[in-house]
Length: 231
Image 1 (cartoon, rainbow, N blue to C red):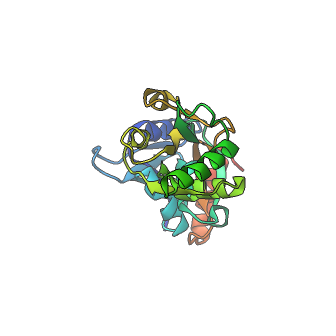
Image 2 (cartoon, rainbow, N blue to C red):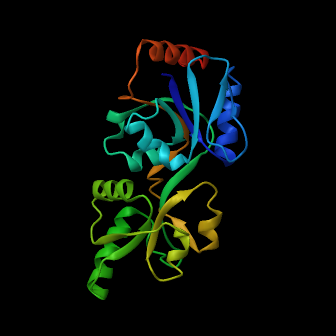
Image 3 (cartoon, one colour):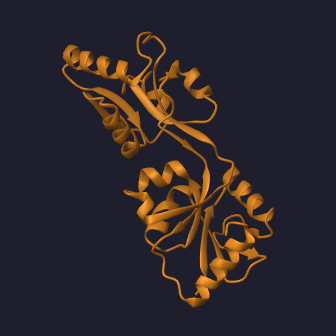
C-alpha cells in the first residue's frame, strides 16, 4: 500500500498546491498528459498522488479512500457532518482565500445585520405568504449560522449556477455564497451583511482520521509530515 494524497486536478489550486509542496522539498506533478488523473511524487517514498476535483476530496477523506487531501475549508465543513471527527487540519496553505457571506440587494437600505434580516424575513412572510428565499450552495453552513443567530422565516433554495444572479432573476431575495473580491456581488447590486463572514476559507491540507494504515503507511506518513515541516 501507499499513502494517497488527493490534490485538485486543475487550475490555480492545483498549481499553488504543487508550488507549496515543492517549496518544502516534495515535487508533485502529473504522471503524463493533462487528461490523466494519476500523478508523481518525488522527494519522499511511499506517497501516491491522485488528482481529483476539489469538491470530491472531503468525501474521499471521510470514506478513508485517501489519507491526505488539499481542499477548501468551506467544502470540508459544508460536505461533512461533524467534520472534525472525520478529518484533521494539518496546515493552512495560505492561498485560495474566500469568504462565505450572506448578501442582500443594495436597495434594502435598512438591512445591514442578521437581526435586520430576521425582521425583514418575518415581514416578508406576512406580506407574501411564503418564506424569504436565500439562494446558496452551502445549505449546512448557512442553516447552522442562521439558527445560531436566531433568524427564522426563511427558506434555502439550491443554486448550482450563478448564485449572485438569482436575485435579478427573481428566484431568490438574498444570497449566500463564497466571494474573494466582492466584484461579482457589486456587479449584481448586492452587498454583504455587516456582521462579518459566515466562514473564512482557504486551501488546507487535511488528514483522514479513519483511512487504513499499515506499518509502512504510517512510516511514509511520518516521513512526509516531517519533510513538510508539520511535525
